[in-house]
Length: 76
Image (cartoon, rainbow, N blue to C red; front, side, top):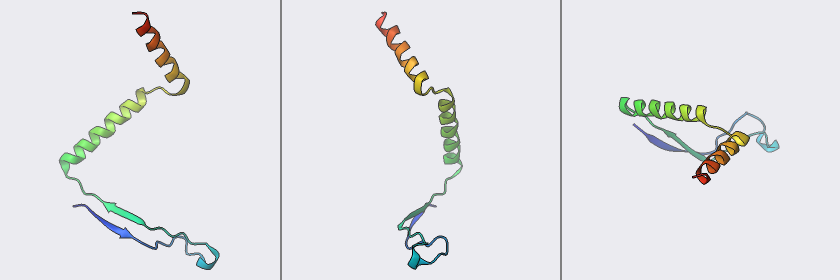
């Protein structure tokens, strides 16, 4: 079962509101329940994204990889 409810005037910290020591928030809170099939899909997606992030390259390494691929394509 899923549902959403409006969350208004959430006071955090218990401070003095006249001195600006409390935070106010106006937003949405959502709860989603999933069945076994959805839970398996979520686990699969997490595994895929973890594998992709482990094999990814960033910054200078990504630049080098792209340039290497461009050189290989231009050599054809």
